[in-house]
Length: 444
Image (cartoon, rainbow, N blue to C red; front, side, top):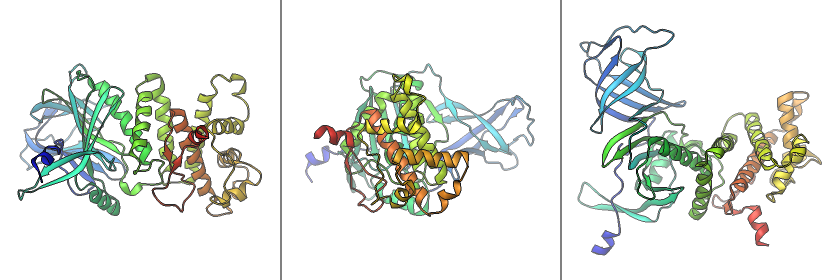
């Protein structure tokens, strides 16, 4: 290997947490802790803060007790609970975290921010849990204990909505994810650095809005929740802000059909640029959050009736957004509004007898929008819902069609023009994709 080749590979961003094997526990802090309360304080004792991802995400703290640490043996709880805090030194900076007790020397953190909202920050370092490889192009190089090194194309760098993102994947990311999926566990996969594109400093509220948007955008693309873990803001290399919170995250084993194809990174770039530009607009953020959370929930495992109702509710929300200038039609039949939403995006409304034979047989002469609303009505209002269960698998096909409609309608709403997969086709190659129908229409 030549010297020039070595210089083209960069050291990976140093993460705050070590990469390790898949687990349901991620240790965020280990060190000296003092428990403080108006009822008393403990001695400084070794303790830890752990993110437990088991039947949800939970942020837990505990202090080691050898019987001589003067931890209070009882705590008085009132209607207005007095504050309790952990005093610790995190990354060289003294910090206090507001916490809750649920036992002797242990408890949970509902979410704690350390560092004021007026603190200047020049970069944030944060790691990601369960994120798939994004096919970065920049080579990374890491030294090995035996004196050798490993190189891999692991850095994904992009600018979105005034923010510059560098995302480094661990060199064994695919093996780590495969192990996590097989064992239904979680794993840290990437380390990310976020800065302003123009090099300016920023405040915590600005970057948390961007991180929230990036999380929900990537989760929508992957069909399951991925999450940033323990973002830390720095100024001139010193930690000045940190967010201890239990993120919403799914294990890789929860992966279901998704619209983005890993082999088309250019599509992800286009989508993220459109999504984050809209997300950073406060007037559009709440609607976009509802829609993306709905499409993720509609595609997850769970009761199929809930998935159908979630997808149809989000479709109706989108149809209302699309018809804000058609006030005379807002009270017309819901299937007509949904049909207009789909036909405006050139999405076929007829049900495929090849790929969804059970739903097509149940629908009879009804098209997709009509039968989905009929099914939703039967689930919600009763009447004669027994017919929904006469044919095993029919509701599953309805759920996939509703999710397909919602994915396409939302991507059309964003202005996306790339490729998608079709979740209603259950026997296909994993990399199969096609242009969105409105882009195909323009190409004709």
